[in-house]
Length: 321
Length: 262
Image (cartoon, rainbow over all chains, first blue to last red; front, side, top):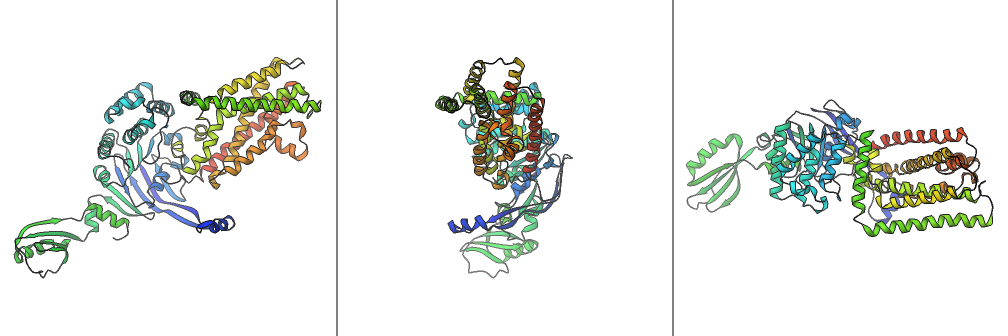
């Protein structure tokens, strides 16, 4: 459904020295720097798949989403979405996609949501009966039927985001781009939106690309993730495999029955207290090492943990893995 | 086409319900614009105290011309002005995004979505001035010429919008349109002057690439001078060419849209 080959996007930005002198200088002499937002990325997304796009701020997530939605032109590469080239902006393409940006509102501030939805009905030529059924269904599912007639600016952030979701899905898009849809929302609203997205997926099997800074969103919605760093993909695969792929160690915690002097263990000790030890053990040596620890130490309790997925991903963002 | 018409009805409905909310602004605009109209009429009346013709027109003819550009002003304020005021800000802030993903012309959407309902009274006042100017004309005027004149003045409003938009489109590259906008505002004063006062190269410019004389002067000529098909064709062909240029420029400039990051 989404096919991306060697997609590149670079911007030319001018760098200015600070202060008034720098500004005056830049009036006459401009130093241009080529900024590579996407350095040749390739991937596919199938119907019904929600791909989590992760990366630090400025990694290129939003640029990628905007290029796929046809908002910005790429510098090079090929993209086919539902058989269309996005930046040609054919109406047939635009009728089948939706874009939701948590940081930019699409609904008109001074109008009630329902008025905006009526406008969208016209824009997408949705038959009247189908529109009303769909709107009733979506607003009931999200629990905001009562708020449909209230001006957008009087709604809470959570309610507004739910309205944005309805606005984006009324025309039943087959490709959906969600750019930080839960940003700034409280836990209940985040969960409501996640459940709603899952429900939409099971009914319509769209291809979805989701960017979010909340791991909860990613864990709940995406089986597959792509990690982007400085315009390049550094991981594209199942969320669950990321820990196996990138962590060489497991953490073994031991609660001891009595105090002991520092033991002689051939692994890195991460934390040591009188009756507690935390040891980092290479994945392939976990079983024999634990076995020998149990024999040599007075172990009262033992846990073996994977490194937290959040930590692995953060380390990947920073380029530490 | 009918879809665009229905979309426009929605824009109208939105604008009216919004306009009623801001009462002070509503009345302030009317007072402000009446002031502007009075000054313009007075300006030409004072001129005619000192001369009997201006650019070949007598006072009655000049008043019809003044009524024409007052109507153009009222119409463009009502239909386009708010949109064109926001447009450079949208480009700069990266707010074009949602307009570009909708299956409808982004140029249409951005140009007419905000109908200034609180300027609509001024359109009625301008129509009133127009009726006054035409009815005080002492020579007989043919009905179809009056109709053609009114249509061409409306067409003049469209030319006004297109030239303004073409000036603003540079914002995709410069990220600030203040310079272009004030240049346009200075230049567009030309449409408030009779075309007869321009000669040579200036005249060529103001009747072709910057067709300010085609907004009110040429239509006024068609009304009270002998009908010339060439003048009518000149207006229509220039309008069409400008429309194609604008559409092409719009498509071209969107390639430079960088969509400021969220």
